[in-house]
Image 1 (cartoon, one colour):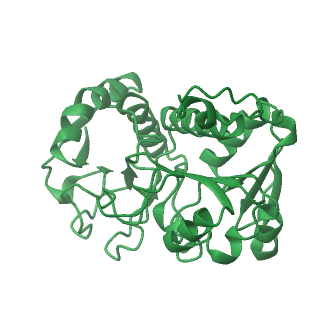
Image 2: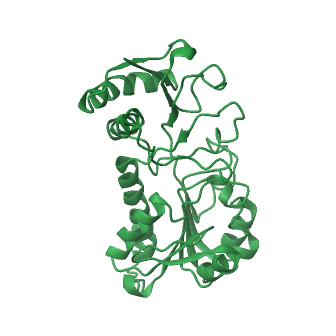
Image 3: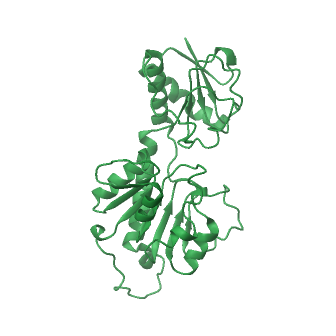
Length: 310
């Protein structure tokens, strides 16, 4: 019998306990799932950074640590973690992110705020958008989530550009990479969506210089990571009209402090890190499938590159 350790906050245990066992049963896995196994006997750890495990050295038998979160920046630098660390790539999480990104992109593209938020009796029939084919969307970060969002936006008719640190080729997305590619993909951008991981190389990828490359009156949408944007530079760009509106789901400090100027800025929408969350039912299926691969001697999927940080 496999011993699987669940290391996350207590509320998550109540949410995941039954769905994980159902998924293990569906994959034909004989599993003893617990929050308090003897570390020396644990085969796999289902992990969230807010759980009790932070020192992985006692887990000498553990074959892999399976993250419940898509982001791994809070654990990837843990020197005690020598076991393979697997990112959560979950079709439920992906679907949620695609829906959030497409919804907010269309909101800005269609100019909904001009009509919906100003119920003042003024007939604003001069405010209308171009068609999607006339507005290019730029996605910084074209991994699993970014590529899925790009395909959905392409399906609606938007030309889509995508940037990554290393070269990629993705159908329906014009791909750029490297420092020069970042400038090229941001130059004249009207809608910029951030889905990069949080690494030293991506910190403040949107700053005073790069925000200045956008088309005047462009839109910024960030469901990725808070440190991708220099807050002061974004506020300055909003105040001078270089950026028309920013929709932000993630922040340097969360919850966003009550005195942060984003709360009161008329051209900022704050959402409370809900662009997409891990769904217990679909995530449990992914975890069970990864463990089954491990038990069959097959390579794990979505193994984190420790040097790259994701």
